[in-house]
Length: 204
Ligand code: MN
Image (cartoon, helix red, strand yellow):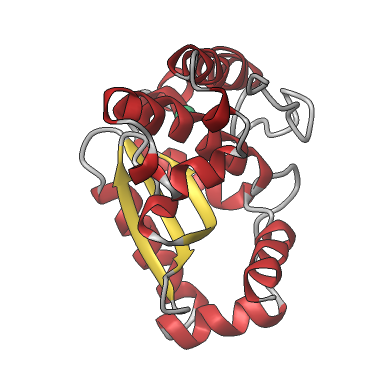
């Protein structure tokens, strides 16, 4: 059973002007698709691993045979992170969270604005390629972190609630080197209802 590129939850041009259709066509149709293809290639001959949800494989990354482990981190992470990323965005979103996740963000960071500043700093401070995250840590508290390449926070026992892709492939066609403009635009795409659902599922 091979992994498959999941459908985008919205049309390719739905996130314009923040993500234009051409950027989405490359990002989803080429980059994400390549992670799926390369993950399947890496797992040829390993059907027991390929039968598991990719999040579980990354959570248990230490059990993946050493000779394919880095390929699974790279391509499995790429597949899982992009699937997650599409889910936490949407057209006409942004604004602020509501309900329990909003209360938890205020409790952890002092205010929504303080959270937003700290998350943006993590996204801007990630040197090279990677992601910034809001996660629930293994001890149950909210954390902001940033990760290199496709290293996954789930491999460290974290449960992701929100992420922004700061690989150049996420923004270069549209924003060139202006990562700050990309991250500022991305806030207007955050689907806080999806984040609230992820938070509720994690707290069950
Ligand atoms: Mn990407």
